[in-house]
Image 1 (spheres, rainbow, N blue to C red):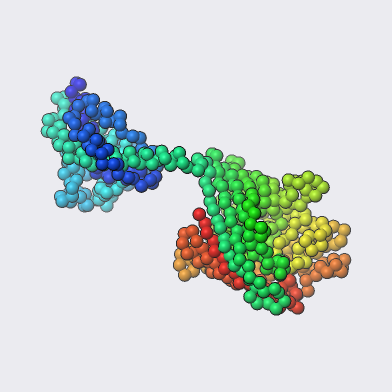
Image 2 (cartoon, one colour):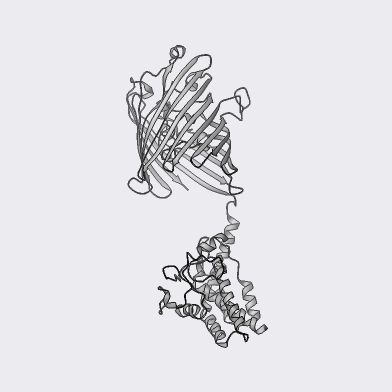
Length: 568
């Protein structure tokens, strides 16, 4: 009986080697690292071991020296990934993927008598019956396999060998043992090369594990270089600016479902508002001191299956937990619209700072968002604190009847926050330096008419009350046209036509203070976003403001912008 099991072990080793060679297991770590060939002296040492006479000690030592391979696929993927090569005998075999067991090598259309492994495949097919092919009758011998697939195939082979041993009380025939010995000698070099490559792969994987940045955090970067200037308009200072905005985002996940985002930001692109009005504000402008600081800081995590909670620690906005329903234009300055107005409905800018937000899916087509952010939550009262200083609270219902359409209904209640776009009068807090309470209402919509054209837009109304002074009404609206993949895949053409926030009415006391926009200014914007590479995007564009500051006494202004975004 010991002779039978010794023969069984030798045949198992034979099938192990043949299967590895046929299935090109040299690429078993293809998704982890590029495999390297081991040094020549290492290969010769392994070859000497393989050429040694088959004895039990040699087999044990060889098996002990095989290094483990880190799998790159999930165990659950083995069934769906296993295609041709080895027929599974278990009840879990995917009969839809594989054809019935092959009984003659001629049934495999891509295995020819001239192939170097033809005899090995023919023997496995006709003598041992452990080969199956694809539904189209091909074998695809060059395909790689995972360790899970190899384990499943090896089990089938061992089951077949066990059947042969059971059927033959005298053990495996001398002819089979001779064939095993012959093939083992023929594939000595291939097995040695494979061993060397696996050793090199294991060493590189170990090195990567030692030098990786973090097991729970990945780093994402974004750098904007932009040039902008007023190229037309007699009443404005026709200056040209060139600057940058740099962001490093640290994305950390501790359980696979949560996400901690820490953003380091450095701004070096000044605001055009000093020469114009908030109407000419660009989406990526900010400070000019190029000082690095922590910008956004938020932690999102699920509550049940349909709710996502967001804790905002610093300088966050409503867009961190609310869909702004402007998919092609809201790129937070790095992509999409060039202007702050074209990025999203201005009422969203009333919500910023630190606080909490919640997104809840009422159904597959209906979503509800709720949030509260205080812009001076870390400052003590009377001017700061979570509930004593400036704040913005938002509630929104988003209806998505299909993947191509979205409609949002938005309500924002804010204290001492401005719209950050529009006329000077529409930004009452900055203009009057008085406490202001606002209630804003918005409707946003987006419709993907076809893969190359999308229509969108919004309308917003703000009822503002200047404490102890009076009330004012502020309106804004926009229509957006998006042309995805214009010119080539990844490009984007965009057109924005709208009216930035305008004071359409105010009581006499506020009018006496100069809060009144008698005319109407239009915002006309066009840009072309060109995908130079996967990581570099260049976006030239023009912004035309008619009757700036909603005052027809002012000449039209044209702003030229060229934005280059690097992402990594």
